[in-house]
Length: 469
Image (spheres, one colour):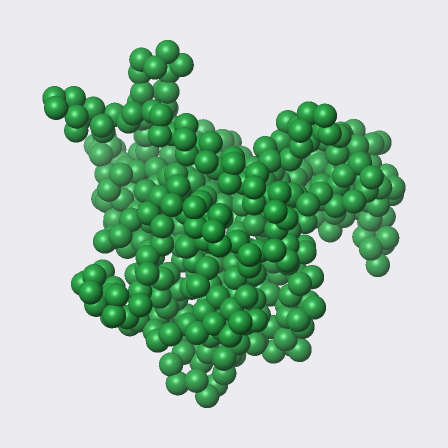
C-alpha cells in the first residue's frame, strides 16, 4: 500500500507539471522549515533512503557543526501542491541520521513514538486543536542594536483605537462575532479555508472572528490522529501567514500581542479510543459521562500540568496571556462549563463519540508535535498510576479566596516561562517513553537562553514606572 502511495505522489509530480518539491520539516521549537529541490531529486528511493540535503547544525536544537549532515525522509501521504507558489509541491519529512536511523530530537519522530506507545496499550488518540490568531494591517518594531530605541506599533482598521470615520472599529473584547463590515476578515478567512480544504485536504468545521479587537480570528479543523493533526497545524499556520501576506496583511500566532484584550489560545480537544469505541465515555457517569479511564487520564494531565506548561505554553509571551484573575485558564481544575478551569468537559454533544477533554492552557506558539505528545504521555501516566483527578470545580474560581482554593486543592499554572522550565526540569519522567534526555536538555537550554535575553532588555513600560524614582 505504501509503495502505491509513493508512486502516486511521484505520478502527480510528473503529470501535474510540478518542477520543484518543497521538503518541509519542523525544528525543535516548532519552526516550520523547508528546502526546495528540483523534481528530479525525488524518486522512489527518496521515500525509503531519504534526501541528503539537510545541514542539521543550522537548525535550532538539532546538531553540532561537526555532525551536521542529516537526511530528510518524505512522507508521501503529505503530498500537496502549494497554491501560492508556481509549479511547487510539498512533502512533510521525517528527519533521519545519515546512517538511516531516526533522529531522536525530530519532533515528528517524538509524536510517532507516542502514537506507537498508545497503540501498544490498544489506544488510538484523536486531537482537535482550536487555534486563534491575529491578522494585522502592519506591525513595526524596533529593538535597536545600538540599545537606543525600543518600540512596537500595531495597526488594524478594525482596532478600537483606530476610528477613521470610514470604518467600523471593534471595541475591546467585543469581537465575538460581529458581521461585516465590522468583521473585515471574512473574505480572508474564506480564502484560507478553501485553500486548506482544496489543496491540503483539511476538513474545516467553522471560521469566525474572535473576542479581541484588531483582527483576532479562529478557523476550526475536524479532529484527526495525533501525527496527522500536528502536520495539519503546521500547514494551517503556514497557509494563514501566506494568505495574509497576499492580502497585504501580517498574521501572527503570538499568544498576547495586545495589552488589555484577549490573547490567542489553542484549546486542545482530545480523546482515546479502544476497539472502535470511545474509551472516555461512560453513560452511567452522572457528572459528565466520563469513564474511569478518562478520569485517570484527566488526573495525569492535572498532576503534570505545571511541567506541561513549558511545552504547551513555551514562550515568554505565553505568560502575558496566562495571568490569574482574568479569563485565562490558569487554575488546575476541571469542570463541565467553567472556563476558568484548565480542563473543560464539553457536554453540549451528549453522544458517546463526542466525549472528550478540552485542555485549555496551550497556545499556538507551541510545537504541535511535542505538545500533543506530551499531553498524551501525561494522560497515559495518569492511567498507568491511576491518578485521582479529584472533584470538579463548578464555582467561579476567579471569585474563590486563596484559602478556599487551598481547601479544594486547586493549584495554579506557572506564572512565567522561567518557572515553567524549572517545573519541566524537575518533572519530566513521564515523558521518557518518547522524549530522549538530550531533547529535554537541549530544549531547556534553548528556552532559558531565550528567557535570559529578554530579561536583559528593559521595556518601555519600565520607563513609565521608574524613570522618576
